[in-house]
Image (cartoon, rainbow, N blue to C red):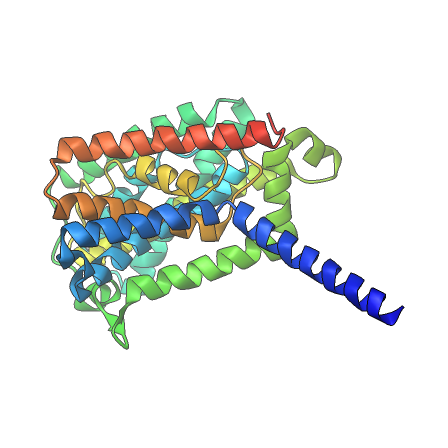
Amino acid sequence: MLSKIAAGEGRHGETNKGRTAFNWLKAQETGLVIPLVLLILLIGFINPAFYSYENIINIFRNTAFTFIVAVAMTFVLIAAGLDLSVGSVIALGGVVTGLALKADIPVPVAMLLGILLGIGIGVINGTIIIKFGIPPLIVTLGMLYMARGAVLVLTQGAPVYPLPKAFNAIGQGDLAGIPNVILIAAVIGIVAHIILTRTTYGRAVYAVGGNSETARLSGINVNKINLSVYVLTGAASALTGMLMAGRLASAQANAGAGWELQVIAAVIIGGTSMFGGSGSILGTLLGAFFMNVVATGMILMRISAYWQDLVIGAIIVLAVGIDQYRRRKTGLQ
């Protein structure tokens, strides 16, 4: 009897292990790991310089810049929103901070001004979307042009420099050989993962994106959640703009150009649904890394910039197509 029970427990244990493995294989993030590894092997085979220390650090650094904005975009997409203004807010955040520094405003205060600017743009985006019922696509597209226009008005297209060494050190410095930007991105990613998976706020974001009416009936303040996710993208974009300005020792008027689609692509490739209700920070990290590996690989293989845009566009369409297919298979559509 005991042996039968033991055998049964053994089979049950094996079944659980099998289910665990099956669930792991079904995880959205897992689907990206295999093509990512194959891509790294292929690029390294074609050009061994891909594996050089400098190139690897450069990929991680570029991924960190993308990841900071993509983390906030993950919240927006999970809540079934969209923010196309992030690229222009990156430029505006860096420029406003740079101008404040040139006016001899202390570094912490100037950076706070930049962050507040990003938060303010997020509040404007969210408020217009909520109060007037205008689709996020239209509102944030308009903000994309307004923010870029404000950058050109403030700078006349010229870079803002010189910037204080203390400010540049944030974007150029490192700790034990690890660039500060990567460390900052890591902290933001960990905090965002905890918020999204361990807090009431995180569950509310998923609920709003899954079904806003059901979330409202459950007592969730849907408008508050929607407003908060746009505040996150505004703040994250401004912070990225400041870090980029520090890295380059100047605030560039064309910073962040085209980033909105790259960031959205990274988030979608990482498994976050374009239609809300699902996604993860880990997936976004893999998606951002994948995008930068692709971009770096094409540069090393000396592929024309025109073809690079074509490839990125194709990746975006493919990622959305996979998302649609997955939703149909799981009965979400």
